[in-house]
Image (cartoon, rainbow, N blue to C red; front, side, top):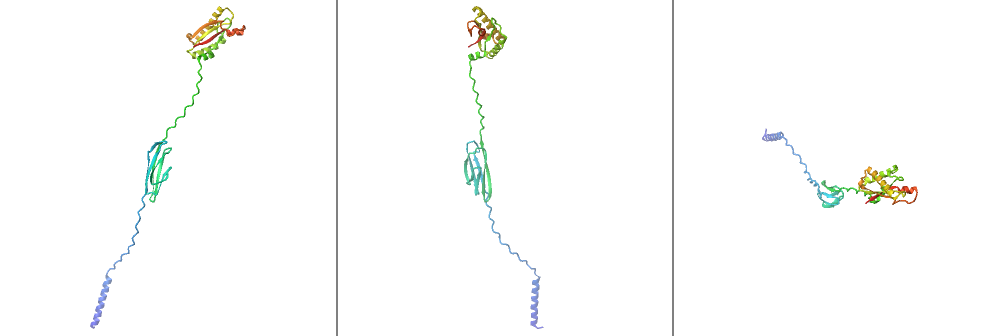
Length: 258
């Protein structure tokens, strides 16, 4: 073999060795391409806040209280009842007729917030209705007017001093009035018609007056309250000469002693 031939063979062997060596090495993995970076995230808008206060918190009806508020991060502020939309910060006098809770609401891009304030109104008690008017007082009637209306004469038979049964009811009514008016003092006058002597009629009038007195004492009237006098025929109420007139003169008459 010639030298040139041997040289070619040597070069081929070197090339084959290189190829074999290269084919025996481990393959290296290729790293993936990283994704593009994310855009920056904007922070959320801040949440609104609000405070609401009432000064004073308790008032009497007719007085005023002051609402004070302050809102932050709010685009709109409402206070109810009654105030509606207001500035973010402020104060307002209120005069509620009754206890009420005010609510403040702040709204903005970050949401909403609320706060409340209570105003207590003291309502005075309703006064009781006036008492009904008193009925007018009855007119005052003096005893010298009452006495003759309630104490009536009693009448006697001719030449008699006994209390007739028909006259007892009158004396009982007289006694009832006199018991109700225990401070009243009075006189019983004995009277006669014109028949008979003056002296006899004075005695008959006395017996008649005392008969009426005894009846009243039995009805519970104190004897010390009673005065007795006889006028006989001296003071007639009628001067006609007939039985009706005579009967009217035969009486025990009662007079009030002031």
